[in-house]
Image (cartoon, rainbow, N blue to C red):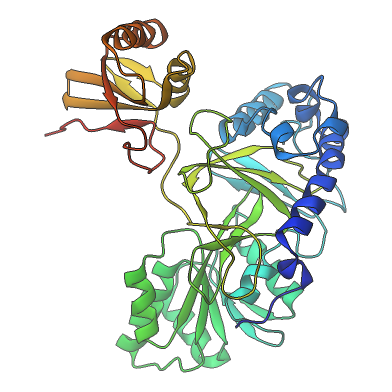
Length: 419
């Protein structure tokens, strides 16, 4: 379990950073030339100048709703054949064997590169090895999850039983007959299968390992599987980006994939936060077929200090910590995290800000808590005016000491009573 998938995982952090930054200008230029969407989004950007994280942080963040909006707009243009909204660098044909859909709908291309979604690294970290048979219970229709895992397993040298979802008794029967080395799918479905097998009196002695995705995998569920002889590990991947991070036998956070550049930014903005602070995961993919630059996942996480005890040297993150979109309706008006950031940026005295909405429904109280070393009635008055100017709502101001607000990624906290 401590063996590495390849030499990339053992690179020094300095070498990895240098090689990622060296690849970045070419990927930006490629996105501008091969993706109509990025030609517009990055118009006027000199790709040769995007050589470090500071330069990358000045580029706009593209969020999932923009993919959906651009795709929908392209579909509404009768003469447009670009169902991907200008983001794909591929066209229909042999270089795009499959197309998938995720909720929205948002359509995603699959290219022909070996291990296109880069899942083999995570599958290896979960303990699977060449020659294993894997029971894959991710869906094979509409969404790419089944194909993501199957292509990764094939790249690792494993065989795959395409179990898909549902039909629990048949899943148990296939595991009994085929004796797979392990399972890939959601943890909740494997729990259902294991419980059904016990109910049927069927032993599944070969299923000793599992890689999970698609839903939370809390320690309580991890321990339940261990009690049933199954070591389960989680991965973090999306239909847009493929693998982002994966768990190792150390079980200390998730290690980043080698082919992505990850930033943690303040929700509602594109501004990177300090290591350890919770924020939104923004990912730049080095995939030439679907070159997403600064793609906002909408998920919260934070960087963990130090390297993984398994010898993998890439950055670790805490894993999924909630959603970054904290847009809240207050007195009939929507307030966005970006508006809170706009207010805070008007005042050099403000170190961090957090909008707390309290009270009962129809009687909202809006309080902007700010960390500052320069508290004064005059500053509070000016900030209150900015709240009114930006949100069109009246709000209170509460000044607190630096580093006293929770480190949970929340820019807007809805503390109202809904009873």
